[in-house]
Image 1 (tube, rainbow, N blue to C red):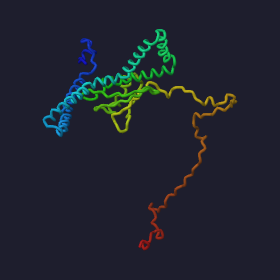
Image 2 (image 1 turned 45 degrees about the horizontal axis):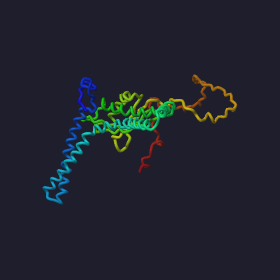
Image 3 (image 1 turned 120 degrees about the vertical axis):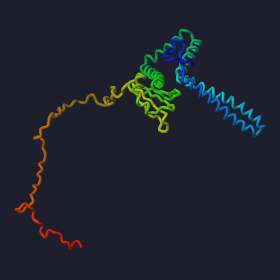
Image 4 (image 1 turned 90 degrees about the vertical axis):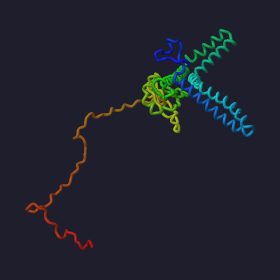
Length: 305
């Protein structure tokens, strides 16, 4: 773990490569000191209180210190090496696969002749490359390994999580018909809304067409699921089972071509004729005023009582 200046990328002038960022390194050291102090004090006090019931209080204090200090040291070690553990988790699949391949090669070379060893290696390498289904499966799982690291690069480069520089935990990835699906657990400082505005840059970093993100759990907003799309399966040509159902000896029937109108002529449209009633004008007097209502038309006030 060495500190490198931004002016010297990859330790070009110093001959070293930065594995853990300096910000994360300082944050880990500070958290480790706090974990040591808190664990030593709390465990020591609890142990002293319990031991005081069986021995002299002074001896109980010494016993509590003897138990608290090693417990604090263990907490310091766990917190201090957490960045290294997280780095090992990021590369855990590659480490396991490399170890398995080397172990297989060593055991095969020690227990078989050279000709048999070469033949087995040729079969192990050639069969997945020759069989299309195996080849597609190997390529799909390889992209899953690549996308996990590309997402980590996205979080480290242009998605700022928090002041300590801690990155989200990339859990697992599996292939899908259109690309890959990755599960991520966010650290405090990030949310789903912060990632939705950066999906175009995430797609570029993952060498994909598009990227989608959504919550993977209804009860935990930090548990997200990324869908990386590399191809569009809805536009592919698929074989239909209906072709095998049709009898090839069925005679063909000449059907007249339908006449598709290209324009609409209103006289050709049969529409019912609707006749509206004629409204009569109200009668007027010679001077142009309306005639007064007759007494028969007037309401009787006595009917209101």
